[in-house]
Every structure is written in C-alpha cells, then in structure tokens.
Length: 275
Image (tube, rainbow, N blue to C red):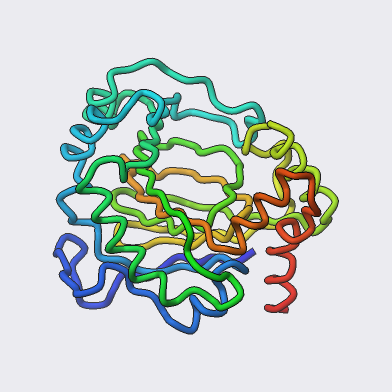
C-alpha cells in the first residue's frame, strides 16, 4: 500500500486563485504510459471556477431532470452491493444545506446544461492529445458533479469509463483496489453485465490510496475498483468520464457475452509493469 498525498505547491497560499492557460496540469509521459493501465495523481486549476461554487451548483441542480440526480444518505457502509437507497429532496435546497443535512449527491451528465458542456469540451480537449495509441480515439464523454456532506462514504464500486476525478472543495481519501485473483474480478464484471449494480460485493484485498484536496485529482482507469471517504468538511468533486475506442469495444463485447479477461486484468498488468 502506498500513500499518494500530494504536497501543497510551495509558496502559493491555499486561498489564492491560480490562473493558467491550461486548466489541467498533465504530464505527457505519465498520461501516455498510464491512461487505461493504472491510476495516477494530477493537479488542476478549477477550484475557483465560478461554475463550480456551491451557489452555482445549487442552481445547476434545479435545472437537472430528476433522472439525472442521485441523493443518498452520506453515512454508508463500504459494501452496498445493491446500491444506496434514494432520499427524496429538493435538489437545490439539498446542495445549499449540504454542510448539515447528511447527504451525498451526484449530478449526472451536467453537459446537458450549455455552460457545463462548454467546460467539459475545454477540459477534454486537453486530455485528448495525450491518449495512448492503443486506446484509440475518445468516442464519448460525460461529466458528473459529486457533492457530499462531511464524513460521507462512497461505497466500493467500479466504472466502465476512464475517469479524471478532480477535487474542487474539501478533502477526500480515495482507495483504488485490485483483485489479484482474476477469477474474482471476472465474477464482479459478469454480475454487473448480467444486470447487477456497479457496487462491488467484496473489498479488493490490495489497494493504493490518495489523499486529495482542492486543486488535486486522480485518474482512474476503466473498471478500477475504488471507494471514498470524505474529510471533515463539505466535498465537491468534478468527474470527467469518457470512453475510448478500446473501452467502448470492451463494453460492447461484454454485453454480448464476450471474454471479460481484458478488463479483469487491466490493473493486474499495470502492477506487473511496476514490479
């Protein structure tokens, strides 16, 4: 297990906005060798972006369709295989009261609102040239906002897409796990593609972890098992998710009953490369 806490940039007060031509600080070599293969940390310059303040996100939540918003209790077990129970709420008020209401929210597909679609395009234009050749083209993309009360827990799960998780407000402790036994990984994938929830039924026995704060983030490769503990204050994160030609073909193949070994071993191959 390794600790990937990212040090604060020397000489830059935490409260001072930093304006850059690029909004993501990405290392070309790291991206080219790691995207699609292993998790890594990164920096960004979005923590003061006006579209990502709590007031702006409350207004965004009020524009979203009910099907695009999840709202759960913040206090969850790490294992919730069938998914968390929904909590009915006024979405805008839930965001405004997030410090005290004990909730965890996800605003899915925020690109349905024009300003956020433009922001997603700007960010992914920075990622697109850095994709490894074997991943092919970026073929689809979405953005998600996660807004959580203090001490919230996101249960263990995986996502089929590539994911750049960017911390905007508050702190998070992110565990990224893997199953050394590929049969266990294949079983989790088979359950999901048979109609099961993306939440896991078991905690991976091996994990890496990252402590992130505003201005920092983590890249998660497709199907990477992960779970999250929020810090003592409100947390806001922006998730940039996308499929590449490779990951989309994998999903199509799995849905049609194809071999799941590629996804089940993405992380195993990365660990072998690092050993």
